[in-house]
Image 1 (cartoon, helix red, strand yellow):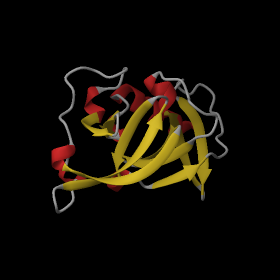
Image 2: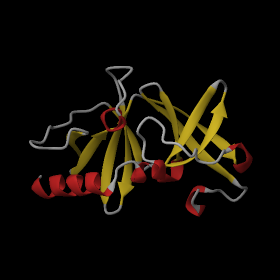
Image 3: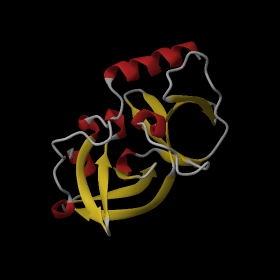
Image 4: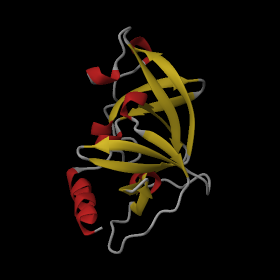
Amino acid sequence: MSSHQEEAHGSVRVMRFSVGDLGFAIAITEIREIIPKTEIRSVPQAPGFVEGVLNLRGEIIPVVDLRKLFGVEPTTAEYKIILRQVKQVTVGYIVDQVSHVLLLSKAEILDRPPVVIKGLPKECIYGLFQQEEETVILIDLSEAMNSEEVHKINELMSQV
């Protein structure tokens, strides 16, 4: 876990969300904003995991559907969009649900698993933790796409 994600007392504040039947958490310091379902314009010849672009207060933002990227089925027709800065571009990530914020101590965070989980790039997983009966994946969304996928988004944005 990077030092910007840790708080002074050896803990990290995370926000829980789900993609399909998978539980995730992201450090709240990585989140720019969370917005409800909104109009997304499709873009011709966009990669399959890119839902399109949205216009948020005059800023054009590419939107990645994490359900498609991770190869999982949506659990609902409703969704939320997590906005996160990735290098110089704000990217929106579609998730099925956003639930709550919690504070985790470093002792509660288990190391990254040695195996890949449902096609997730292992670089995006920086740990796991247990919440009730569920194993939750701590994820860095900036690492959820490989360099080729990021390049495709940059190309897409140059055409918009």
